[in-house]
Image (cartoon, rainbow, N blue to C red; front, top):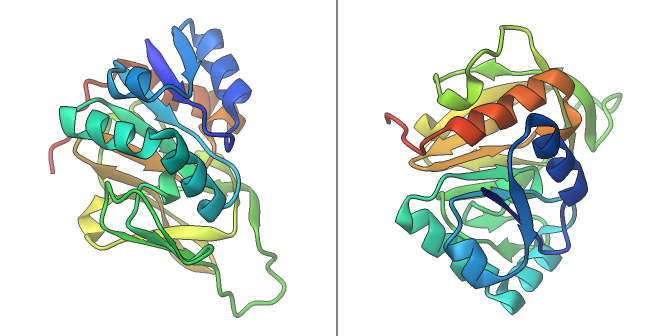
Length: 207
């Protein structure tokens, strides 16, 4: 059973539909106890880091996610959910959850023909093998919508990068946590494969 975290900042129904399509049992929950004791967690998100953190703290979900992480529960963060697992976000100058040391930074592009947010399909470059990428192929594209990107303090935590004028981290891995800047739930068969992989993943990661 996968628990999808509800903190008023996510593509919850899209994630749920993808899991339903795969035949993977899931539940949407905003209850800290349910989240802290979940078998697996998907932590999605679309929105603003500062308002998201206010909601998480008000509900006690930030502490529940830390508890689950410390217990070794497999966790998958998506988009905003990948950014606020870091220590700090430039969006609203916000202290975030801190499961991974690092910053979330705003795109500052020199090529003014490129729009921000970075929106649409783009290829990813896998830097480190991980179970989440099982059966993906070189050249596979995934769907992005974001104005900020992740920059972990330890570069060895970068599982994959993407290029949008600059090369930025688009997937992170640390212990029992994976986090993707792209949206698997909007990425067709490739995204479905990643959800299937997460459903089968035991949370281990050889660092």
